[in-house]
Structures are given as C-alpha cells and as structure tokens.
Length: 316
Image (cartoon, rainbow, N blue to C red; front, side):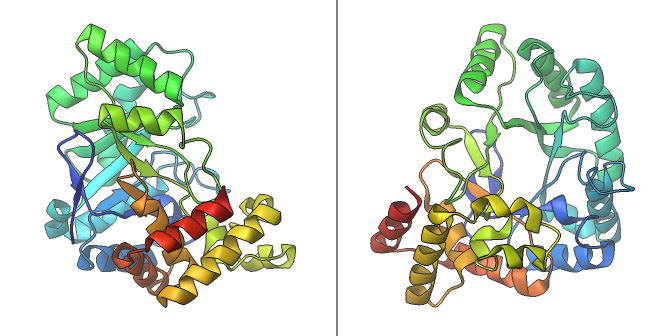
C-alpha cells in the first residue's frame, strides 16, 4: 500500500490509522487481536492509542488500550517491525489535571513503554494543552526521550493555530525538537477546528496531520438517522448533536456519492478526509472484521471532483 510521509518526522504511514480507543472499551482482547492481525495483513501500519484509553469506562484506570496492543505484540513479536505505535501523554490519569510537565512525561513514558511491550514509541504526542507548563519544559523533556531512543518523533493533539505556532517558535528559538505532527478533530461535519489558520500553518510548516473522530463518532457511517437509532451502540450518546438539518444534508450527500461509487457512506466520508490537502491520514476504529474491511476499501476509493464538490457543498 502506498505510504505517505508523516510530515518531516521521518516516519511513513499508510493513509489510514487504526484508532485504538476501542481496545478494552467496546471490544475485548481476543477481538482486538484479530482486528490488529487483519489490519496489518491489509498493508496498513499505524496504530494510534493513548495512556488514557479507556479511563472513561467504569472500572478502568487507563492504559487498557496500550496493554492490549502490548499483549498483541508479545504474542506476535514479528509484527513490531511492521507497525508504527502512536501514543499520547498529558491526560488526567488520576493526578487531577492535564499534565505536560517534565516530571510527568518522564514517568508516563515508562508506563506506556511497559504496557506497550516495546523499547521505543514511534510517535509520542501531547494529548492536550497544559496551560500550567511552558512549552520549553515539555519540549526539553521530549528532547531527552528522543536522545535516549525511547521516542522516534513527537507530535501534538488538540492544539489550535496560535498554540501550535507558539510551540514552533519556542522550539526554533531554543534549539529544541518541534512537534512534527498534529492530531485535530476533523470530519465532514466538524471542519472548523482544522480548516483555516490551523491547516494553513500545518501545510506551510510541513507538519503531518492525523485526524481523529474522522467519522464523527460513527454518525457518518449513516447508521444514526434519528434519536431512536442512538441506542444502537455505546457511542450513540456522542452522536445526538449531529442529528440536525446540516447533518441530514451531509448524510444525503454521502448516500448519493456512495451509490455512485458502489461504496458505503463511511468509506466515502473517510475517502474525503484522505483526499483533503494537508491531511496525512484519518484515524478510524473498527469493532468487527466487516468494519475493518470497509475501512480498507476507503483507502482504495478515489473520489471524483464531482463527488468532492457535492460533499463540500453539503458540509459547508
């Protein structure tokens, strides 16, 4: 499968990233293993997770997703060289606040390496902004990890244009490593966070972009079209906000383009993100082999100019 450079990080990824937030949440370890096997067999190579996944589940403490990935690598040692492991740090893991301090990063990286059963994290990302820690302190902590060989590249998530620009400025002035990747929320419905100044900055600075909620928590799959549909999955509560006139207009356009291409709405929605200027790859998750096969089809789907114009018009 054709890979894309992930900004200037030196990493190359297939144009679709597996979202590991479902591991230990909506799917168990056995199902996770089968999906990871199929993902790699399809020629895809990047797995995104975070130390906080899935802390929101009653009874979980965080680290469940990383642990399952680590157990899979332990059971399949030959597959470590075939995948890139992307994880994040900075969420509240019980300390009561978001934390990108050097002290916390130094502890959290060791915990993630242990859970992931690996000696190196390919991409280590600041999960959330931490207003209490200066960029310089965070970047110096990452510099130490890069020099120690515990991390291959660094990135950030949920930074706006001003915050990202500020971090890049500090990195340049202090001679520190910069964020080489960005992970924003982005899909056909949620476009405002990335389109505009943030996308312009990412393009001008050569920053790799991996989008999350690329299917709007499953809404763009088309299976949620009324409030009655929200009970179809554990993610239904996250979808209700999309059930407005604009959301229905986007679904109608997805239906039209999907019919024209012999595809499913979710495949079209992901293909649209993959085709967007400035995007390296969307993140998407699957909970069954059927869903995973659909994700793979989205990578192979090439939308026409007419298709893209119809989707742009509906989501504008």
